[in-house]
Length: 192
Ligand SMILES: Cc1cc2nc3c(=O)[nH]c(=O)nc-3n(C[C@H](O)[C@H](O)[C@H](O)COP(=O)(O)O)c2cc1C
Image (cartoon, rainbow, N blue to C red; front, side, top):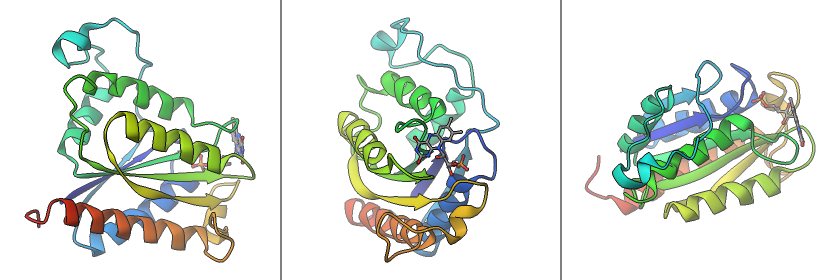
């Protein structure tokens, strides 16, 4: 049972990464093999609409997305993490979303369990959760829910609230990792 955490922040070690590590640790404790995939040191170009993947299911753009394609294919569960930027996902997240166009025809993401992890300073988290849920649905993924954390400066999220004010951001992240892993094991009971 493999769980992949993609951190779509340009800030290495930032709030999204902190919460993702918490979610992945909970996933590991629930029995998953985990992989953290931060995009801050990766180069992922936008989709250039060349159309090559429509025939082959393979993207011909040679960049770090090739490594992420392999990681996505390998994963049973995927936590997609992004900070809110202008009430939207980051440019890094949008590049990844668009580049999964290569997986549309071949349905390589179909049936994988997906969850959203969103960090905001103030507003837009609900909207970004909805955007990610729409992406998961288009790719025929099974949605395990989402978590929100509030914080601005690097590390603030450790003491930030979650989407629900009665839970901390760290508690929400932990619960997300656990519930996604439980859902994966229900979907694929033969996987240990
Ligand atoms: C370009 C930019 C746009 C942002 N837009 C929003 C926004 O619309 N709403 C919000 O609540 N926070 C916004 N923020 C704040 C970030 O979401 C916040 O600082 C978050 O903790 C960053 O996560 P990170 O440390 O993982 O990069 C923005 C930050 C930047 C740099």
